[in-house]
Image 1 (cartoon, rainbow over the protein chains, first blue to last red):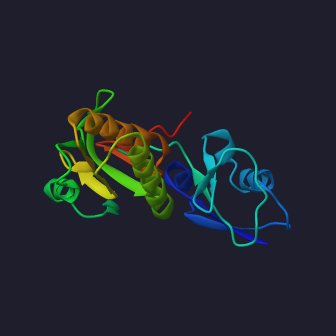
Image 2: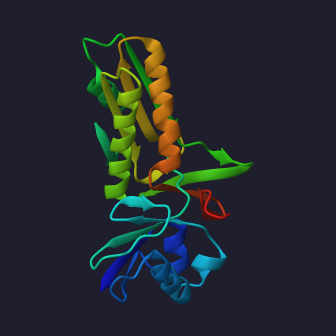
Image 3: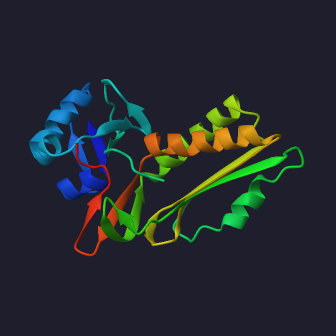
Length: 80
Length: 136
């Protein structure tokens, strides 16, 4: 299944991408995606912190992903 | 009015948007671009947003404020893109029957916005740039 990942701010800077599509096994969860992300973009693991949002909603724990989900990496916000 | 805008923010328009005959108070918060941070000169700011989620979170803040205080009308407008020194980054206006609630609701909105809304600010200096609060 395909999951689209969006990058913003420092996560965009560290990966060099604003979006990237991952092909994962069905029933994969956020931890699986996280491993793939860290493998592909090691700087995400070693240099910064971020939260996940799935389909415009913060996910604090884990969640099983579905084909077509939009996952965003949300670094510490700094609006205002 | 809840929106993100590339355009310059018009404060009067936002104040007008919350006027209500039932309100005796309008409180306005204006966030502006400061020319320094931690002793360094800032040249400008560049705001980026995850727009659909930022709008959703802003609407949640407005909804929560309306649950906590007797809000007549509430508007939040946040800048995206480049803003020079002295320009407006965010404007929040809240109308309520009496002043205390408008102060409190407005403060709640800006404090919560800074914690939850997926908007990021890049500070541009004379000799480089940095995403604010981006490193642990």
